[in-house]
Length: 333
Image 1: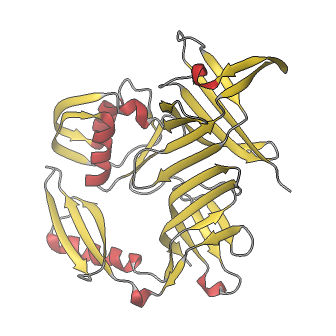
Image 2: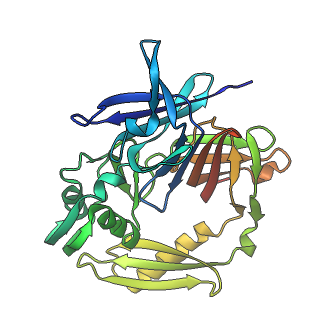
Image 3: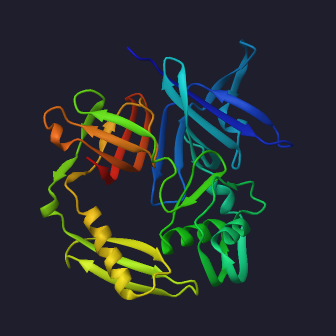
């Protein structure tokens, strides 16, 4: 039988009072939300209002938990079984609620970006130059080379660095998320889609609301957007009038006809026979947004397939440790 373990490390910067790292291994609840469509990952932690202060294995005293940290402190959440812990979250304390148990809200490195304001205009610039400007002096670095997108003009009008990144993500169809602490990935697809995690009904899937849909029953409407270097856009829409809408982005295509052909090609990829919904598993195996999950059903092996992970919710508490996985685009059978 596996024994659940947790470790909450809170690091208070110097020269604040009680500076340094503190580790807490008693926790009431943890919930972590990560969504491929959003820039930030968030976490909520509920801790005892008092904690035992131990140094070198020797008990020193009882302390009030709320006095040991504050807004802006760095926080690392590790969860696992039998002492084998994996980092599930690394970010900052966003808000402290003086309740019983003590509740703290946390946010990844997006917290730093919300504290930087931008006001600037650019001519003949690139996506990389814009990202470099947005991230300057935040301590956040680009994990990989971003797509080679160019703009003849671009401006930021009194917005936070976080909103500027979300604007680029939403309006230009970019994949954007933190892959490690203060390491921002910006691309067209995930950089971790070569990581495969296997789930099998009856083994490591606890429950699910997955529904199998046949390709012929999928109603889909695709809006395709062609972004020109001068920041103007062309749009075409194909598919079913009453279908679920997806928006896809392309860059510097020559004509509207090219855009429509691209839209039809992508719609054929999106209209697949496969699972829609989500499932709940244990904390092991470890799975992240952007990874690929292979879903296997021993009763219907013909339905086995691989999907890109779109959303994750990790929970930890008296009810155990759980990972709620929402698969998105089907990659293969």
